[in-house]
Amino acid sequence: MQNSLPPDDWGSFGRPLFDDPKSRDLSRVGVVDIGSNSVRMVVFDGAARSPAYFFNEKILCGLGAGMNETGQLNPQGKERAMTALRRFKCLADGMDLPPLTVVATAAMREASDGSEFKTEIETQTGLKVYVIDGNEEARLSAQGVLLGWPGSYGLICDIGGSSMELAEINHGEVGRRISSSLGPLKLRDIPGGQEARQTQIRKVMQELKDHMGKQRDRLFLVGGSWRTLAKIDMLRRDYPLHVLHEYRMDADSVAKTIEFIKQYEPNELRKLCQISSTRMALVPYAAEVLSELLDKFKPKDIAISSYGIREGMLYEQMPEELRRRDPLIEASRFAEAKDARIPGFGKRLYDFVLPLFPEADDARQRLIKAACLMHDVSWRAHPDYRAEICFDNATRANLGGLKHSERIFLGIALLYRYRNKPDGTHFEPLFELLEDADQLEAEILGKAMRLGAMLWMEKLTEEEAHLMWDIQDRRLLLRLSETAAPLYGETTEARFNSLALALAAENHQVETV
Image (cartoon, rainbow, N blue to C red):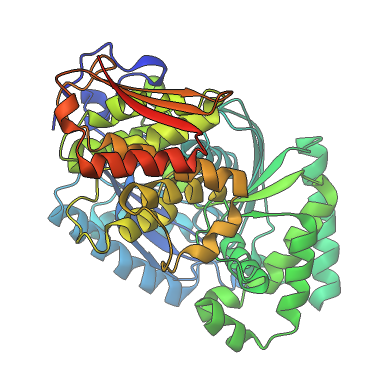
């Protein structure tokens, strides 16, 4: 659906790019990652800068299991991987995708029969397999993080089955990087037990530190073993929002979670966290690596990234202009263009509500913009559940560039867009992730959008309807043109009064000009 706004009417947010020909080329892209522990196919779709997962399937093959002893790929793992790859090729053909981008990592590049298996895959499936080295794996993983955090900085740590990669990012660029042998499958097979294993971890980690230098910024953790540890940390903390991407930890919480793991029988913990037995078996080795990593590098904080090498392969194909865009805003625009009743009204709604937030910084303005763009995308839902669906979409959807507290802010704003009070929803435990002042601001935004939605005009402009808020005098004014004045009925009045109450306005009135 084309946007009705003129090309120059997007201000500092820039014109949407999802309809640009270069972006349309990325509208449905399939990638396959042949790892040491798993083989996964992902098909990206939607707004290229913040794509949805149209298809996502993983098979835990264990290609790298036993490689320390044999030097070869695991025979059963090869059978399972080949079966998975045949299926993925068939699915890609059925979806009419462009050729799949297939990369293989540590197990395939290190095994003595890796080259032979690569040829076998290509002969039997017709897929072209790229076996990448450790530095390239680190670079692609770092680019995956940049897909979700444009312009971010810090240290990327991507752990697979047979290797662990480090890469630094700074202002959107990938810098130093290195690959190591600290994958859980390899560590599990080291003779000599825990003592020998920890000696090896300390030795390799010191080498990594010497290469990477001082890294005291954020640590981004990429990979299934890290996500599993984060799930267990959520269980330990009774954390209410079960979204792994952008989940935050620190060294103290990691230490507590490692002790927490020791207190449980693995099968019991696995069931509580819904973790596969194959993945759970690798957690103790990954925990030992993470403890040493934190001790050596001492990052200021830790963020879990659900984006990694597969997302990095998508990022690789993006034009630079698209890379620079805000993934949240692009995804919100795409949702509005696809699902809203009047695509383009979100921009006008943003202009309408913005006077209520004179002190909003850039970070807050982007959340206001995203909320306005998404305010109407769930209109098809049953009215009794629309508010809850909006909240659920905002807090749990695959959106990049959002901290958990920002997800809650968006969710509360959209909840109030459709309900005057949040009482009775099962989402209230999540509100504690947001400060009280931010909760109030989200409520004000939601009620302002609820009011603005009543002024539904194709050409709503500042001249037609305008909010004025004098924060010193606590005075709220809604100014309407003669054309827009008939829209101010009983329901509109009730919503205006509700907004004034949320603002603690001492005087509020409507003026027709």
